[in-house]
Image 1 (cartoon, rainbow, N blue to C red):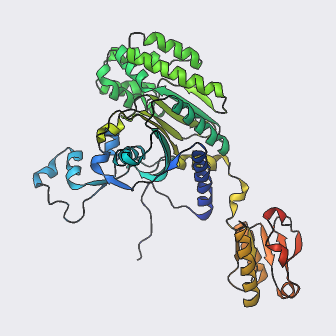
Image 2 (cartoon, helix red, strand yellow):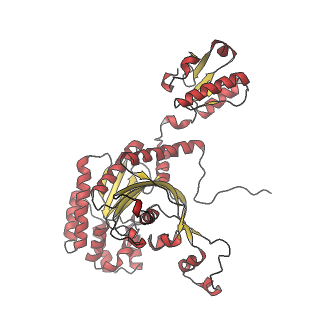
Image 3 (cartoon, rainbow, N blue to C red):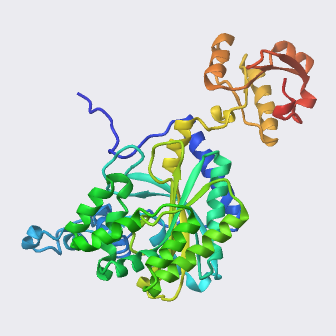
Length: 457
């Protein structure tokens, strides 16, 4: 019996109409990046494992897809090491490479490797797939696209304001109502200080990053398991539950963190970013969320996360400032800030809410009916002229029954059918039918080339 074909869990095939929808998202985001002055780069699907390990925290390291070395991958491994419970240490001997987990760390590697050719500040964007060995579920895949925009070589908080504006622009274009959540890693460091657990910052951020998924009570339990004292957890709870306007929450944070220089610096940065962005006007909601942690170790300042208001799904965009990421590659003092649009989750949101333009239904705008070799050749010449004017066109490949060819046009959602039969050839005219209204118009071939879709019947 032949094996039933399948694909790995957490991956997907995309049909032509699905790809048209996805390209609508990519094109919208790509144009937004261009309008905001970002330059496109690409990096390899796989990186040296040494580049990736240690950049995403303990959980991130576990979710890295590792690639076995070619040939005899056991040659450098002692049999006793196979019993080693430290899988990460073993993996570094069996695997020299891994699939990229995100686009930020490869970008940091790119900046360091090509720093002599880069003009600072460097604004780059990247639209490529990434891979995570996560448990597949709705809105969470093992292979998915990220659309990243980053600015490196500038400490200015204007970059954060511009990136928030970029998010607002994209969501406006896609017609997705959103809430942008912001916080600051320095605020979280300050909170760890004032509750008496400055050395537990990573444990705290990893735990509270799950608050939307598992709830506050479960987060408190995890914090205790991670060695945070019960007293510190009780001090933390009211901070995580701060309510009110952004201004009121910032004022309260200023009081809570009055004894933490780092924490107050974070509050000051938030005041500048939030105040500047709100003064410019925007369509999205902007909310200071003290529980927002984004448990990636490389963030050092502003943290950003975006939620869709009308669809139950995780964050659809995220990002933040990272001051030390290039330092692990030998270049310190290079600050960066960036965001990443989760194209696959945005795709799911648009599908759920039906927000795609109707024009995406077909890749072909004009179908020429095939009546035979002579007519098909004339039709192909006219189709070429349409393509030169930016109108997609095709000639039906076989001279089959008209009903079948019209049925193809209906099924494919092709809006116009062009007819070049024996009489049209003799009169040097084309009959064009609007498949939606049923209206037909006879057009001289000499005028046909200059038509736009708006000029069709």
